[in-house]
Image 1 (cartoon, rainbow, N blue to C red):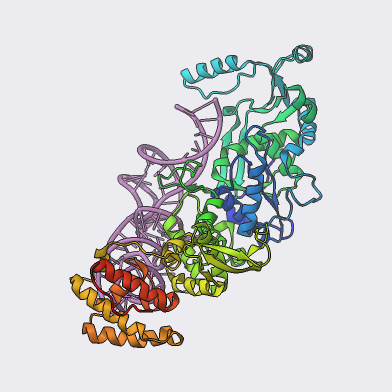
Image 2: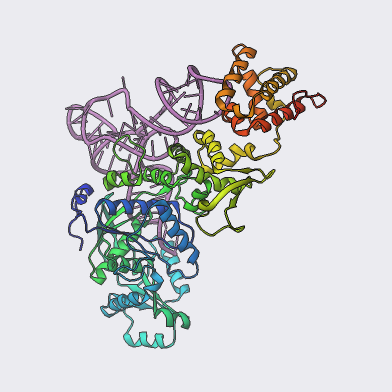
Length: 551
RNA sequence: GGCCUUAUCGUCUAGUGGUUUAGGACGCCACUCUCUCACAGUGGUAACAUGGGUUCAAAUCCCAUUAAGGCCA
């Protein structure tokens, strides 16, 4: 029995003994790591670290049809990428045996047998049709659908007979009629009436001979396997999504039948989509891998999902994983679901991007430039890329369009110009593609600043080109360019520097928004700058003769 | 349909009976900076679901209603 029910969950939190906490995350490998699973993992992780306990990863792969090896890998890699390392899990031996449920069937057999022996569970041979008919009948008279208890008192002889006939069956728990009460660390007292549950199924007979040979007679259902594992793994606190609240009374009843002690329960609110429904696979971006691919940083995701349903009780919003460990408390977890606010994630991600050292940020951005087909790495010795740690032996990069060779330092300079403008790493390619293109493509009208005439723009660019062409290569530096160009812009425009700087920017970048055109000009180099201005002049007046462009 | 859970700005939230003309963040709007975009800064916009109680006093406690979500099929 649960004896220590406190009205106030916060009182229960005071009873936690540091060093003894064991929590777990138990995902099913039926798809990639879900952002909601990641958050549950985070809260469990924080709780375990806060109380100097253990965080365990268990893979619930009892659904053989849908469970896949690749999803186990995705879950493990995703958690590691986020920094949520587990103390015990599928790849660490640990004293409690394997961490895949499919490897634990012999344990489940033992516990099912125990229930059968103690007569707390029984065989049920009712057919699907029979059960369905009964359920429909109950629904039609407005009663909750539950099992009739028909097979509760089958004689042992009858059971033997059916078993020898290989009649399909399930194993049901003999549910006593009582109030099931538990203390939720977040919600307080929660009460269920067990009679509404009926004798629910805890396991089913395995029929296929090859599976039977491998796994034993019985396949446990979710709640049963969960209870057995949580007990065997000595889990002290079950911290999981609110969607499991209605599983809890079943698990409590199973524990009582098995005479196992109860863990503490904490049900955290769900992450919701924009329609305020549980975030599901159907929603646009749901897996941690998707966020990684889009260029979200792990520290941004951690920070953001921590704030989904939890707050520090202070106005502080920026938290690293280790500062979360310090601040985290179940008592500041929200009771209602939190809508996933992508815009705020973008803001946090931009913040962390701006915090990144330039060197590191460049390394993070390079794969996106490669992926976009703008550049390709040149490896030191081999023609073929090595499987791992490529960046360390990459000598330089080749711009795919034109074949020019550039250094990592050049890329660093490019990234520096765009660091403050990035919300996601994936945006880098679109923002900086003009650095890696031979020819820009933009409409003539884009060169227009306010109500300038094309002739005027032509004059500005032409005169700009003349000035620039006189600068020596060795003096081609932003500081010199700035002095020269800003002075010119000032003279020319009488206060409206846009008359000079806007056409220059469009000519160099082909975009209506970019970094400072003078910084861009420095990086592009004299040749490319003059070439692009020439192209702009040509676009404005295809027939015009260009005098400055002489090599 | 039954059971369970929840309810403060558009979103995430502070608030644990008087300190509240309800605070912060994202977003949005305006201004400053500025050739553009972004960054940064300043200001603004905007909420206690409804109805009853309890109390000198309710966003806060109780009840009902409503709505939303979850689970079971």
